[in-house]
Length: 285
Image (tube, rainbow, N blue to C red; front, side, top):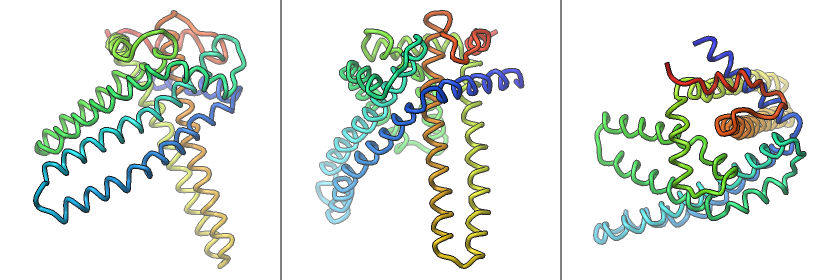
């Protein structure tokens, strides 16, 4: 287990080396977060309105519920599309770096735009799966919700490489989902540890930021200066946001590197150790 975690941490550091070369890759998760916020705000009022109507009228409940599901589905599609589109732009830029090029934000967006239809198709599939799982979860007991939650985790893991596949190949979303599941089925153990390792690493980083941030805010409060308190809060929030952006960017680079190795048997230098990548894709014993 410790060897697996060590290899996973090596891949995280290697991803960090790539991010240091192309810091503009942080732009993609930033734009994605802002666009996702716009989507949430755009759908919040209609959904709240439907909820208010539902509460005011006992009749026509099924009709309102159906409209709610339709709006909810459109919300899922829009949100997933935004996330997948900018993730594809990030992965596309990372692939350019792996090929020895020097990617720009425009290059990444161009790659994502060329896969517009496939990304939209994948968003429709993901939204359908999400709505089905949520509908089931609302109708089952505690144990059933746990099972549905595990199914959701399984779906997330199985589709981890869909975006790199869509970016790298001229294939449809259904074929990409199948290929991603096939690759991960053969490489289950080390790959899951790799993703978990990055999650644990950033959980610790966020925890340290919060602890240090609390200490900073308390120290500012002891001065009695409102300006210093405001500045301390701003700094803590800014560092948390930056850490989240770095985590998202590293995740995209990591998935691109893993798929590149799985499909081509190797990867360009840029800090990636071929042996470490090989171990990350070691078949189950």
